[in-house]
Image 1 (cartoon, rainbow, N blue to C red):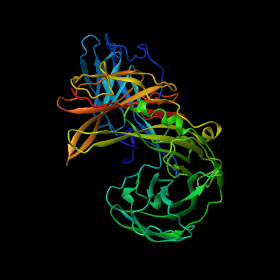
Image 2: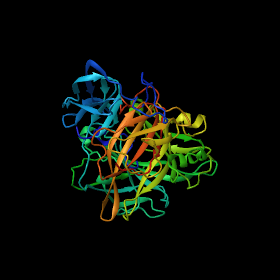
Image 3: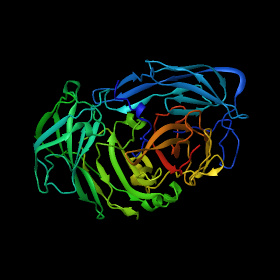
Length: 503
């Protein structure tokens, strides 16, 4: 299995994707010092176990396969609340997707899976996921696709093309900068050529497995209230089989789907913008957008963001942060009528980090909400959970640059002012330099239902510089600390970016 997204992380990434009640330790308030996140009861020995079933949801039928954990570094850490010392209990992962750590004392553990840590008192972990499309192989070598087709509606400069394959779960954008991109007024494609490996989810297509190649014209339109948006308009559908590294040529005709629909939102962009300085006092607003699409109902638990290609509506009308009531937005719908309509709203923010005189690295995060599309039309669209408050590294304010934090530092925070966070994810990034530019590498991701984490051995190293992203998650009915790749609707997250810190 080569397609599984588990190894790609939690939609968190460098951009661009859980719940549960508090245990007996309770949540740690940012003002509390000392370790209440780990209480080890000596003499009670347990075994930590995990399973990793991956459900592939495809037009050709669903399939469940284990995610191979044999190469995963598995360690359970406990932390002594008196001395602060971590104790490591090595474990193993297997090709059948199971993992096991024997002889672990009861209490809270930090279960290390590669660079991911699940902070929990549980001893049973569900590492499974649900993914759109059949199990397949990603294309990594340049693999040209050339398309000639008639039937476009007269091309507008703000139109774009999206690629998708419903069975394979492939998707991506084709925009300017490729050979043969249509000029304004064009009604056909003549030798449009793009590199399939550049797509966002470039699963190798195979017509013998039921894969179809679809290329959609996303057309600029204006809503009933004069708001510009792009919507699914016409689609070219044809069969295609690819061999990685070899070119393929297809042809056909764009046709307009018979089914149509409408979508309208009351978009409170100002509510997202009001949280900018909570992301970081120096954060810069970058974008705000709404996507609307459809998915099989089973994909409400998918790893990736629910709303993604093929998009039915894409709304990012301008760079302002003022509220918008769009009025009706129409679209043509080539997707199965039984699929669940879903929507995503996101507001993006950035902060720059630089080591010495190196060119800064711009880190992007967002505040987002995933819901059924009907929820977007029924009530104002605004954040469901806000950023955490008063982040600290040890006992010092985390928005400032800090030195001397030690290699065993802790991060703490208070609850968001908006909504209820059901889990938190802390991403630790290490800064470096390459060719005169600052670089960023994620070295750890810690999932917890508490308001603090301690960094296990090896995460921070002397002489290095780091920053953290603290995500607050709202996702009723699941727990990111025990089931890190499970999803449910509604869900939302918001990020905080700290200053730089070093041991």
